[in-house]
Length: 111
Image 1 (tube, rainbow, N blue to C red):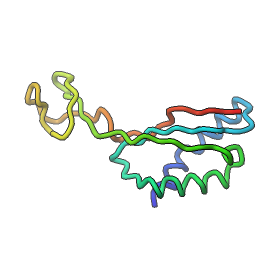
Image 2: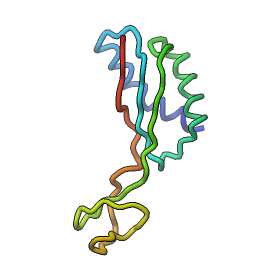
Image 3: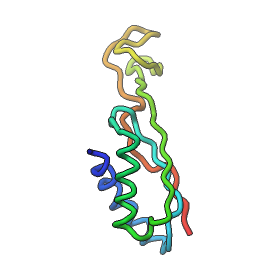
Image 4: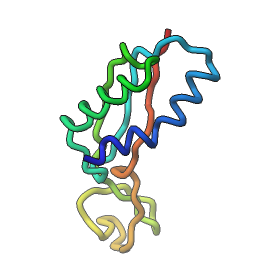
């Protein structure tokens, strides 16, 4: 269950934020997770419950997340597209990922 590992990646940034801002409690955390991360929602929620047990400032925190679909950006013309390895506008190959691989904090609410 790699969802535990994803929260371990966030832990240093979240701990630094709560220390720097002198925060008593984090009440809401919203994440953006790319579908390429292969996250299973039930496993993510279970991992978050475990994370909350280990980090008292998150005990009353509500987790929300959005799963972003994979999309590509053509490196030749900049066109955004899905579901293809070839740009539908100009025919160029080897696009760059535009979304679908992220794991980031979108919003934090605090007390």
